[in-house]
Amino acid sequence: MVEGRGWVRPFFQLWLPLAVALIFTLFPFYWMAITSLKPNSELYNPKVMPLIVHNPTMKHYIDLLTETDFLTWTYNTMLVAVISTAISLVFGIMLAYPLARMRFPGAALIAFAVAATYLVPQPLLFIPMADIINSLHLGDTLSAVILTYPTLLVPFCAWLLMGYFKTVPKDLEEAARIDGATRLQTMVKIILPLCTPGFISAGIFAFTLAQNEFLYALIFLTNSDVRTVPVGAISELVRGDVFYWGQLMAAALLGSIPVAIIYSFFVEHYVSGLTAGAVKQ
Amino acid sequence: MSASTLPVPPRTASGNRTLGRSRFREWTEKEAVFSWLMIGPPILFLCAMVGYPFLYGCYLSLMHRPVATTGEFIGLGNYIANWNDPVFWRVARNTIVYTLVTTFLKAVGGLGLALVMNQSFPMKNFVRAALLLPFIVPTVLSTIAWMWILDPTFSVLNWLLIAAGVPAPGPSWLGNPVLAMCSLIVINTWRGLPFYAITLLAGLQTISPELHEAATTDGATTWHRFRYITLPLLQPVLFIVTMFSIIFTFSDFQLVYVLTHGGPANATHLFATYAFDIAMSAGQFGLGASVALSMLPPLALIIVALAIYMRKR
Image (cartoon, rainbow over all chains, first blue to last red):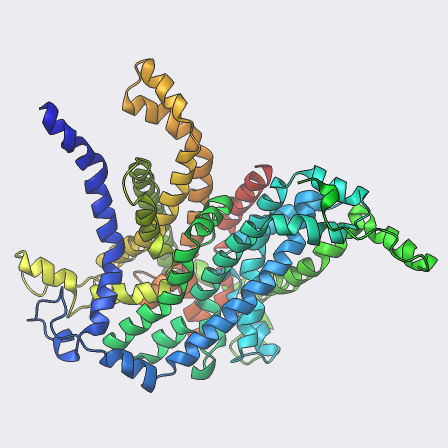
């Protein structure tokens, strides 16, 4: 019995639940990967055992890259994500720095407003936003999403960065000020460099949120050459009732890879961002 | 590192600065002035791109405004129409069920997974990274994979069930109203659970092991330690995570739009997808805005409570 307990306890308390969680978590990705490699004859034959690939083929990838605008969508997604992340970081810093380190009239109200804005979900705003974008004649331009994504990202970045800015001791700032630095110099040359991990966290997070965004891209972008990957995949690889499953899976996998790579390099930053701000989905 | 070694340009770099300019600088050096100059541009941006659309949305919801017309003011007409619309109430019920069930599953599952992950085992960081994948991969793309897993004809799930003896063709996961809602709930849980687990794990790691050791010495059982040490100390994190999850599940759009489009027969429409259908597909901007804004009262309560709570922390 004593020997039995030696493996029974860790098995039920650790390995079994962990294995169940991992299978549940990773199965859809496995499914994505093998579906994208199956020839159509295998995909649409219910008699073939579906859990493995019998005759792997790259056809779906080749078709995706040559017959659709997938590369354009990828380029658009990247461009939009990078620019809106950059804008959001700059605005986020400008908001968070005074809120975290200065006293000024209205600070409490602004901090509340930023927190509230951060929590306002997008579906509350998309209808008026569509009307506004239309009346600005920005429909079907990447500017439409570059302009609107920061509304989701700025409050988030500001919130996350406030936490980082608060951790830098006030003495450093005072010392710099005594040495004659202006407030701007103190901020740019003393405090900001110390908060680089915060910028990486906020940046990674904002970037993945921008890649994940769907609603605004769906409404504003109807031309294939301005679409992002999620919108392109869902509207052009599904024609009427016909689903191009192989290509859809190839697109889903390729579309996930950039985020996954960046994420794998910065897991720690991502997790600290996730846990610091408690986060928007 | 002493501050004096840092490269700070001297304050009086040039002696011939004009009086006006130094006055201006003195002014911008005031804490309040500097702060407002700094936050001004982002605040203006947020007012223009969040505040204005919000108010404009409220105004739109009071209009009868088919697409490409200027519309007419009809007061609360849209809200009254919603009140008398059985589909609207169906949508409200769907949204509430969807939110409550997924939030419960994610909270319980996430807490369980966090407790499991809080033990030491090899490749822990790798496992943690793998478990977070559903949360970082763009939702639409992972939902496409789920759609194929639940496909009416070629579902791998049904293949497994049939292999296990269930009569063919197996359940129609997205065609049956109840099963379609269950599928959405499972997939939303799949996507959201890692967020709970990893955040709660970070919360667990801040609890000092000494507390548990002391309690064990005093004869506390595992359950007692969980109930009287872990749970109370985890409560703030659990609260924030749950509130977040409620807000963003209540207003979920992507998953439903891609997987079921609200069907079959409105059985899975949520406020966001229903508002989208009315405004974008049927072109009724005013009515759509009123459906979207119907989310506001319950959300506002949570948002204000949480914003106050977060600011206090």
